Length: 89
Image (cartoon, rainbow, N blue to C red; front, side, top):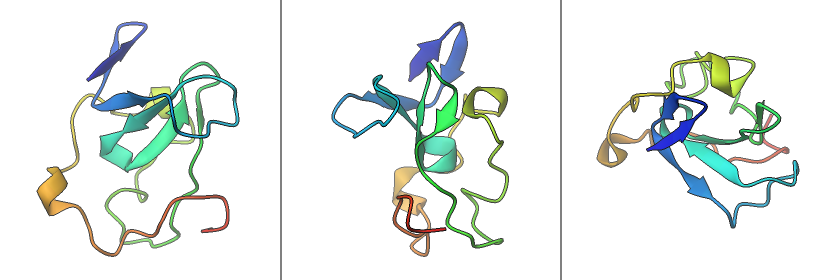
């Protein structure tokens, strides 16, 4: 768990993730995506599947959505969730 300005984020710091914002990225398990906590921007695109449990309810800005609990356990992650990256959309 990571705490950002009092907001609990279920996830972890990801200093080796190639964050384009120039800051340490944070992984948000709830949305299976990385974001920049300083710029409050997602670093991963949505997969485009309307039925995807991770992407369907993802807010425009990471720190405005529910981040303090996981969507599911890692053992139950969706097999159909597309790989992250700017070319996935």
